[in-house]
Amino acid sequence: LVSRKKKPDNTVIDVKGVKIGDGSQQFVFGPCSVESYEQVATVAAAVKEKGFRLLRGGAYKPRTSPYDFQGLGLEGLKILKRVADEYDMAVISEIVHPNDIETAVDYIDVIQIGARNMQNFELLKAAGAVNKPVLLKRGLSATIEEFINAAEYIMSQGNGQIILCERGIRTYEKATRNTLDISAVPILKQETHLPVMVDVTHSTGRRDLLLPTAKAALAIGADGVMAEVHPDPAVALSDNAQQMDLKQFDEFVNSLRASSFVH
Ligand code: PEP
Ligand code: MN
Image (cartoon, rainbow, N blue to C red; front, side, top):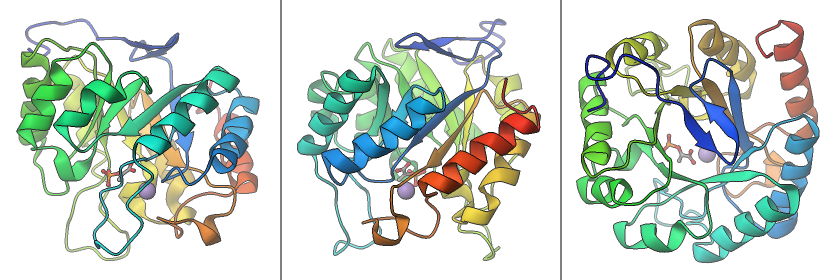
């Protein structure tokens, strides 16, 4: 169902009026984790001010260590909804349990399925059974074929509103947190009719690489870029090495616009 052979024209996903996959370039910004209303609202104000309407934030956090911050859960989704309503934005947030999907659709505009859950088939099926866009991230060690099959799981349940997201894969290279597989972007666009985004934050794990990788993603044909922004990354409860602060966010957007990568 996701194959371009089945459907030659691009699928365009409409997220509260923001069109992803129509040839425009869209951006998703926001903190790694939802920490408080004030934190999310501060970032939302900055993102909206720059003209963007897609806001991210994790409420259920799949952390490597069980002793790390696990997220605010439903409380986090409520904060996201409040901010989205106040700023007229759309929110994207990760759901990790199939039982939480039905509740989540009342609070968020896009269900994110994270890298660690790309082959959680019960979660994929649950996301496929609702009428809500899904942002599906590539698994840490998933081949492109496995990634496409994960999207097929969602679509086979009836939900065709899927955005694929390349977020780096695990290789032997240690200079970056993951290795951004930039060639996956045109391959996914050739093989499927779905929009493809690139998460520059988790693929690099390095603040200094966000801008060049974002440029590369857009130059190679990605439909959008995701990057994390936090009011004070030094005290962030997760991913404090790679989130941008508000000044860096401002420079990031200005640089992309100046190099005409963003229309
Ligand atoms: C995230 O986007 O918050 C996240 C945890 O990303 P990934 O699943 O790609 O590691
Ligand atoms: Mn993160």
